[in-house]
Length: 168
Image 1 (cartoon, rainbow, N blue to C red):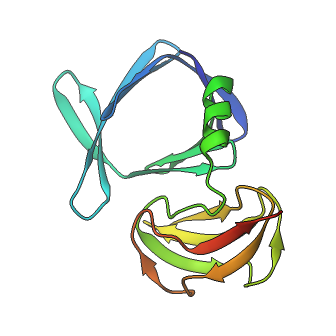
Image 2: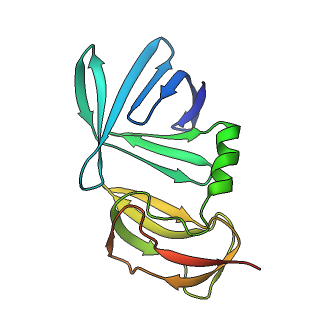
Image 3: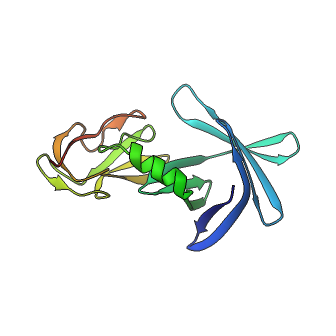
């Protein structure tokens, strides 16, 4: 499978991408990269890169969904990954109206209030994890039924920040 990343605005094609629950292998040009991840008890993920056969180096990394794009940050590198069309169609069908927290973190900013009408893709809240800020967006046309957190709250992965009621 080939995947396109946009690094500093320039498209980069990843070739021979293979992945399973804990490992990802990809080729850029003539260089092959191999990563593995381990979920830790606190909900964070330990990311390692194979730097030589059998030698693994720990990396700081984070990934989250932003609309139809998967955003990834590993160390100082941040990239947008355009998923394959079939994956996007499936992701949109299962996309929650009120997105849950993609990882443990801090509620940095709430961008909507109870009773406010929102449209699909509208930013709802900003979270921060590992000094990385991410914006959570509405999964469809809706009304904010409840705001369940306040700015400054620490929340676990999967937490519901807002409850949206679908537009009738």
